[in-house]
Image (cartoon, rainbow, N blue to C red; front, side, top):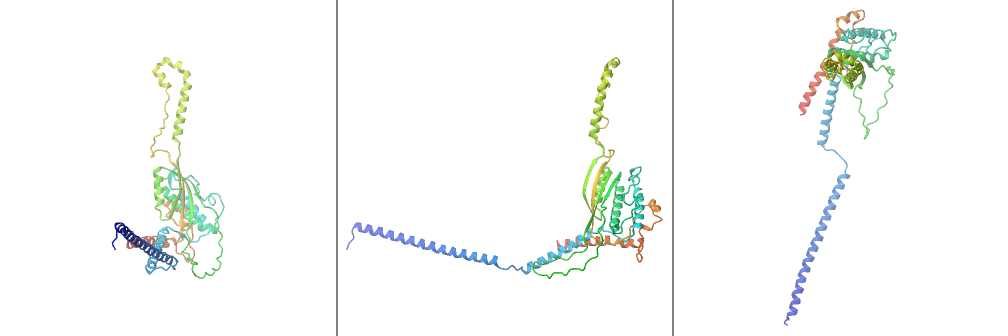
Length: 387
């Protein structure tokens, strides 16, 4: 049976449609298959993430070794830093109120004789260096509980005044210290039982004595050069000293003085205008010269070396870390102060029974500085080794 032309055309068109439909079906099936694979991979990844976040945390051996090494390094650094910071700590032998007051009086005489610009001295006569409560005509004796604090305060104030005199300070005008009474000594109660160690209940033991600080305020008259010297010396002190506030102003207001002098000259010139007629006979040039306003003698440009000193308000905080070895209340007093303290024992504080004299304890008092220098060198060696 032969097909006519129309039938052949229809068969060809049907074959083309059949091939196209098959191709479209194959593409559709491929897309559905790939989508299923992607969904499966997504579900697998989400399951892995959920398992990772819900798993218990357990450090690896490498992490534990790193933590232990860092802990040991930080502990060594803290110990070295504590030794260096505490290298200037001082502790004093026990004394009595009369002995301390006698030593305080001898120190007042010695410090008052240091060089300055008040008749050649660093302070006015009778200056008490912040201890007005116990010096002069006051019969007050210090309380026994206050003696350790008073010894620390007197030692630093004496050291600071010596520093001021060595730097060329003109005058120490005021010294303030914390004169609040010390807290009464309370007997320590039996220590409470330590709680059992457990998760989330870790307690660190106290690491040695607690650091304490005392604040001092000074008012000085000083040249700019002397003030810079004082600041540098305080920052390089062995004691842990912090300058908390520093204010300074000129003791003279040169601008106001200059304007006041100019105003006075202008006022004098106006007052002299009434006598102008009587002075015309002496010549116009001479009259104009007398009528001219003369400028003030003091200019605004000054020389710090010859200018009036600065008024300086200085506040210092001194920290103590409780690492000092007990030493006597002695200082390297000059020869002129030795005569005034001749009647008192050396340092104004008698050594208790069984204690060595101050001269014998001097080498032992130098041991903390040597230990601090050795610790500082060890710390630098550890840092180089760590690098």
